[in-house]
Length: 240
Image (tube, one colour):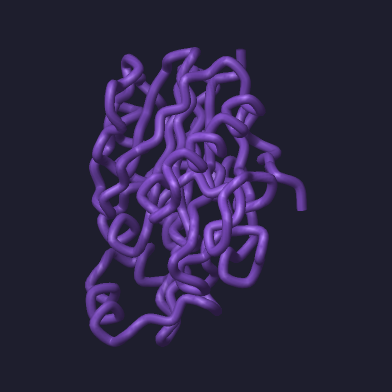
C-alpha cells in the first residue's frame, strides 16, 4: 500500500498510512500524533512529509478529547483547538483528524465550498458528532445536508471491536440509527456514523466508506492491536 490513500468523491483529501515516515518502533513510521509518546522532533518531520505532499496549506490538527465539540476555524489557530471536529471555508486551511481505530470523517460541501473533519470514537459516536458537524456547517455556511459529501476513512471493523456489557447498556439507550450498529457484543462504529448521517439528510450516494479495518490491516496504526502505537491522519482542504 502507498503512503497516501484518496477518496473518489472528495476532490482534495488524503488519508495517510503508517508507511514512509521517520518514527521508530513501535510507532513506526509515519506517526503524526504528538500525544502518542513519540519523539516530537520525529513527529514534526513526519508532519512536514505530509505537508509537502499536500501543498501550500496550513494543516490544522486538533487536540482531540473524545467529546462532541465542533470548532469553526476562521483563521489559523495559534494552538491546536480542543475539540473532536472542525469546520472551515478558508482556502488555505487543511483540516486533519488523527486516529488509530476510531472513525475519521471528512466533509465537503461543493455548493458553499466548505469542509469539515471529525473524530468519532464510541463517545463521539454516542453523542452524534457526525450530526453536530453537519449542523455546524449548516449554521455557519448555510450548507444543505443533501449537498454534503462525506468520506469515512479506515477504522476498526465490527468483527474486531468487541465491547463489554457496560457499553452495550449505554448503546441500547441511544436512538434507533445508533442502536442498529450494536450486534451482540460487537459494535460497528463506521455503520453507526453512516446511519446517523443518513438520518439528517446526507444522501447515501454522497457517503464513501473506505472498507479497511485498522486492526486487520498492518498499513494503519491500531490502538487495540498494539499499544503504544502511532496515529495516522485523514486530511481535507478546498481544492485550489
